[in-house]
Length: 236
Ligand SMILES: C[S@@+](CC[C@H](N)C(=O)[O-])C[C@H]1O[C@@H](n2cnc3c(N)ncnc32)[C@H](O)[C@@H]1O
Image (tube, rainbow, N blue to C red; front, side, top):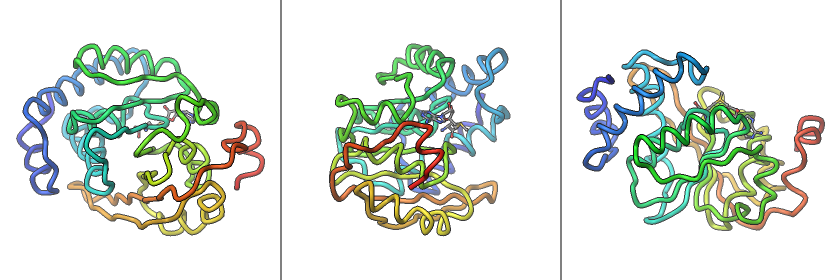
């Protein structure tokens, strides 16, 4: 359904390697996404070339920006229909993937998707504020990521608790990333992080993508993440 050759060409251009069979699995992913989206709202992007560019290639850029060690672990917070986590896992069969979202209908979709694609992933129905206090998830991951979930300050409180010391939180953002990173300075520091840098990309459709990289340099205090109402009322 997606323009496979075009996507492969983009991957070559951006230096992203795909293992054998990944393009076929991405194609089946797109097909199921569009089919399921007719009954349950998952995404506004349904045109095949747009899915290839704005969902798949965009997600895969994470691999260009952040180092994910061989056999490492990735958590995608507020993953929605699986972005960026699922495309990244299809490109990196060695990693373990956890997909977390607060909406049950998204998790139902993801479980069915994993079954169809024969993909191993933990799909967790929880708010990030709760998941980050769960000892089985807290400070366990080499890489945490999120796209289109919240402003960077709140996102740091959602995501940094999941990251092990020495690991990375990578936030996928469009324009205004420098300003957001500046405004989140206090949150980054309080949560045990350090701004490593921002990787800039231009997608084939001309849109801007910035990936903000935050390294976890010390443990996050047990008081974070706070309950949702507190985060909303008093952002760090
Ligand atoms: C705009 S969608 C983005 C989905 C996906 N990351 C993408 O880029 O296509 C935001 C997603 O974040 C989830 N979300 C928002 N706040 C959350 C929270 N506090 N904890 C977990 N999931 C959350 C929503 O349920 C939704 O699926």
